Image (cartoon, rainbow over all chains, first blue to last red; front, side, top):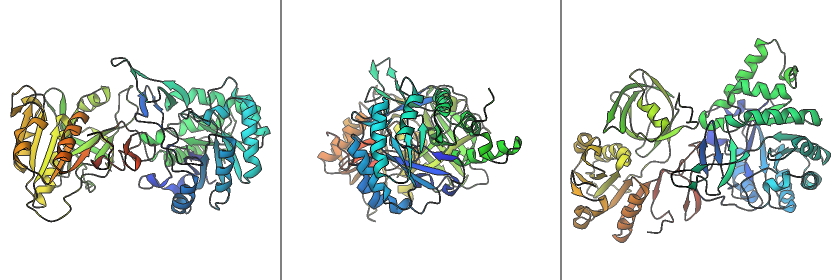
Length: 291
Length: 256
């Protein structure tokens, strides 16, 4: 990667949606929308509720399925000069494996991010990511069929994320990314109704950053594999904090909605930070928190 | 881009007409029915941008007009902006209204606006007039004071109104207006509250009239990336922000 800044799945489409606003070649990696074996319509509207310093979403992995991705979307994005990573989700271990196998054949996709942490689907998703046994099971199965870089995206909705990360590492993950959204809920008191069609959804944005930082810190002490940190990064300082806590790279998510050019601003801001503190490389600040 | 407020006038106590200039930067090409995503500063409860439809573009003065209803703290912050203040926005977004698909300038075009939904109809009517059509307006509001920008609309074409209290035009809703019984239109454009749009869409369907509606779903990115603002269509869920906000009623799955 040319720099440690990536985009979080589900917040940046397939990259091309943002091409008018930001030079995609200046972004370290682009993690495209969650892809499943079969087409999914996602959840009914409303899927969005604004909350203090954040938002809840309940999109539910709307996508046209891996075959459509391979035939129609991949040709459109394969020449983007960034590391193009596909986020893979599924309702069963077989789903994950079949989807990963198909993506494995695509030359310009060097990695997948295994999404075992989506809170917005009834089957699969987060249920794979909340116990060590099921994490080892699905990660191990995908590891057997997928030969490139395997990043496993973890949910914060667990008691001990370090144990979950260790399970992913033991099962062959090359990296873990965290955190996916935090389960939350919003209510319209006047109407006595939930604001999301699914009642509960996934919280993201600035409000989740302290939770994400804490978890990156805990996981960094527990595993040897690189960590991709995300959760509420709104600017370069936030990104530096994740690197200091032990992340090797970061993903920018909800902030893309507020500033479609934020990714490159964060890249530049990290470089300014390194210069200001006389660091030669971003490697020098990974896990450099002084405690 | 950052635009500079040139005026910000309150209307009927609950709306603002904000005019902004691009300064030396010419405003981008914009189509009627497109919108801008506004960055709100100084409102702790407002995290996301606010989608606001384009009211009018005054090319001569390089000015963008936005007609905004005060709904929550975010829009109220926009109401506090003064001449000279800067406002960041992403624009233009969305597909915009479709121009009539042939060059028969005699086509009867009805532009229906309800409440603040009349906002995009000003630019649409102006463009249709420039293209040689004679658009007709039907505008509904709560009362006479809430019929905004009437002088501007009257410059473009005939304006018929309804008010809920009968203080202007015919009393009732736009769908009750006698114009719809008397005239047959070739195409109807609608923007307003969903029940109103559905009622007009139902009239259009029954009378076999082509009809486009502009939807206003809650959205985040505005670019078709987050898939939050979807509406159900006959081809599955579509993003209101990037595949809309304007849809032909035949595309939608409305029960009308």
